Length: 136
Image (cartoon, rainbow, N blue to C red; front, side, top):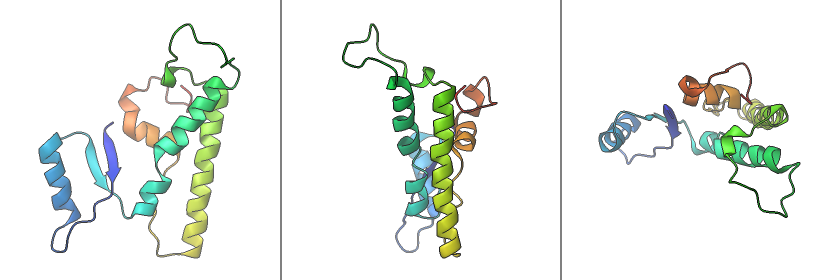
């Protein structure tokens, strides 16, 4: 990944930037750490909660899971158009939650929430051959 949003809650007198710089001293330049505004934003944008169940469902939905597979499935290589559509719909639901929360709490900052397709391009853009849709 090129970039990872993180939650930083530094002690008084310490900035998010100084904590982020310290983390980069430990691990190097990449991935770039981007301190999010709040825990709720990172929780709602937890890509694993969108990605893994949806891709798993798309992969196994038409398979006989009562018998062993000939070889282990390649998780990210089995996404089809159906799975891409489902990923988009789950992501749309998260963005709808964002819209409702901001409408109810106008001072709440949820800038870290993006559509899964945008997140994917920001995180893996250089590794994606076909950027025209989610499933490729």
